[in-house]
Length: 113
Length: 115
Image 1 (cartoon, rainbow over the protein chains, first blue to last red):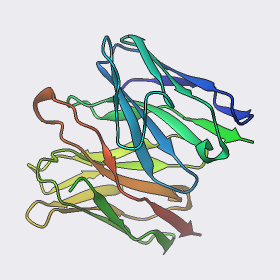
Image 2: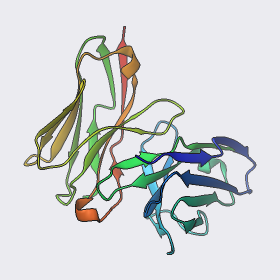
Image 3: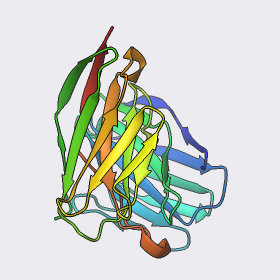
């Protein structure tokens, strides 16, 4: 299975600022997924990112708030924009599907103060 | 229809006992059912997964039982150990034939195995 490196592992940010989270995969993958996990909760899909096309966002998530880049088949970024304390969560990158299962990065623990 | 319902929310089991976590789904297009284990501060790690063409899959102490007609599947952890204490998530997706759809997660079960 793919190995995912996610950076940063954690950050504390001021409200109103933005944070960009990086996800690097050790092999080429077609689809990458970004999830949010609020404290003690399950995982909620933010968007699906395909290389060379616009990300597809789930209901309740918008591009202006969570812009995503997917410049190649091994890398993606998620930006959390104009942060508020409600954005404090763990953000997780995932790859997989197409019969190969889904692998998750270790996550980015974001605290907005 | 996209939901995956998971129970119980929390579970306490004695060392050596059997831990059982249940999930139910509605969408009959789901064809991939994984279980994930998550320790605090870590991302979810794939534990075991099953497709609907089999009713049971076993890997070591972990077994998935799958009931297609009831649209239910469960995780059994045999001889539970304190190191199994973690949060477990069931999930489902439509992944047939290379077409990948999103993975839908259950609400999670916090398992505590007492020594």
